[in-house]
Image (cartoon, rainbow, N blue to C red; front, side):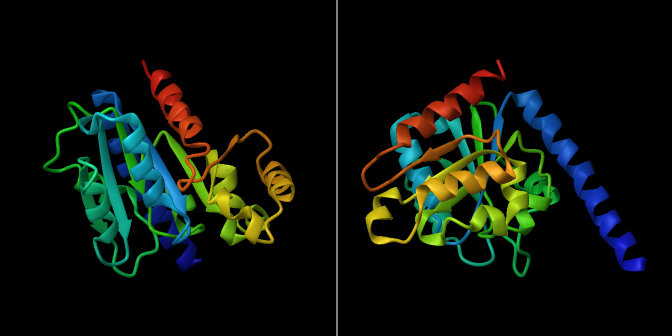
Length: 218
């Protein structure tokens, strides 16, 4: 019982910080997208291609979550986008309090979209509200078409699923139809955008989704 009580207290505290984040984002009219995916799923590369396609880097702000190193933050910085590193140590996710602290010292006055690249993990980040407008699952074809059934919560919580590395389909035992069916079993309403950052396929659809989601806030 004591352990359950501690967990409840942690989640209650996190939700309070999430509401503070949500209020700040609403005040600044900033869309916040929480990108969740395994290590190597292609989150950082997708962001790089996103900024190349959309231009005007001052419109964006990125929070990079990692257990260690600032490798991904350095890559994003090369795109001309403001980025802050959130190093979690042994923690497998970013919580709402860490997001709130990351806002310190940064102005959101010219920002339109905040991207949070969460720690590489399909489990823990799905459980924590950080004040975002939408969770987005990023999954690569190299990970297997059964993942929606093995990690249902993140697919249930997501407003969008982005499948990456579709250029590898000829070389993998990844069944695209089975993947789509598995996603539908878990979350029948969530759209799927299939992308390749190598060929550029689907990147325009992803950018259009962001723009449409942003316009809904106007």
